Length: 89
Image 1 (tube, rainbow, N blue to C red):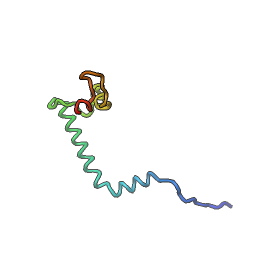
Image 2: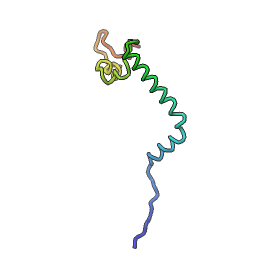
Image 3: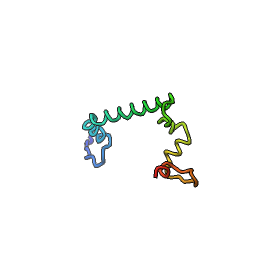
Image 4: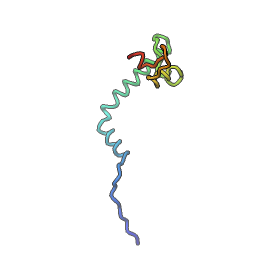
């Protein structure tokens, strides 16, 4: 004969917290996420077609030069070879 004793949970239940957050805020979260996705898709399409001089959002993964400028904005190699922070400052 064994006793079945349940211990009270003392830890933080991350999965339950996410589910609660999603139930409360899903109507406010979904429209901005969809809008950002549409914006990035249109931007990428315009960059691929060549209607804009800006690199597309996927360039951060495919083009090393773009990745360096965006991921390391504070680099300064002297002269005019500077990161985006120093160019806009």
